[in-house]
Image 1 (cartoon, rainbow, N blue to C red):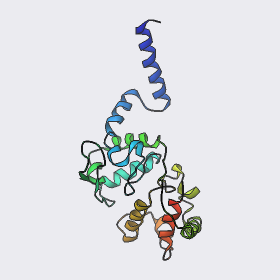
Image 2: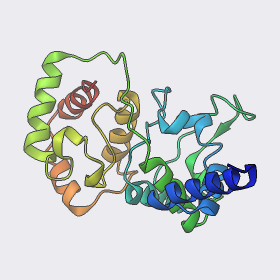
Image 3: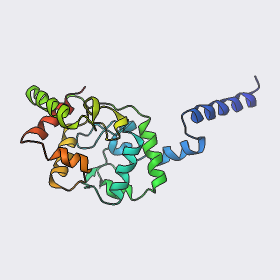
Image 4: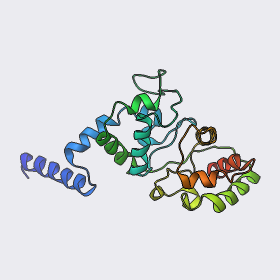
Length: 210
């Protein structure tokens, strides 16, 4: 086969693959540029190795898009974190500062990129078996309608809780409890029913997934 024809077919095959995945060739290149610095905090393909930074690979695109919009509007708390790798390693930043750099269409592209990646559960998390059982009961009683299958389904559009980093979950629930992070009316109604110790039990339950 002639070299020119071989090159043409290779490009054509790439275009077909990208079209099947729902990403145009031009858009694919743009997405790679947009997500380049995300790995410096969230890890390769969103598989965070920092217990204070959430694993985002596998989150549904609508959930991630809404999260970034909320950060940009400063509707969610934005604690400081450090770049773990890359040119800005050691420098501090916040998700509010990062989100303001993108428009909504770019946010959707970033979210779609990470939605196609696997959710890699956190490892070596220490859990209390008794709290795990308590948390499972609380989850099944109060949370299951929005966080089915132990909070493991991207299709819930509520993030993925099963196997998420426990320190990150603890910080998020602390923000909810303090009223710093907005909740839907449905969630607020359920959240008010939590008893002393239920929050920590939920953290251990979600952290127990491997």
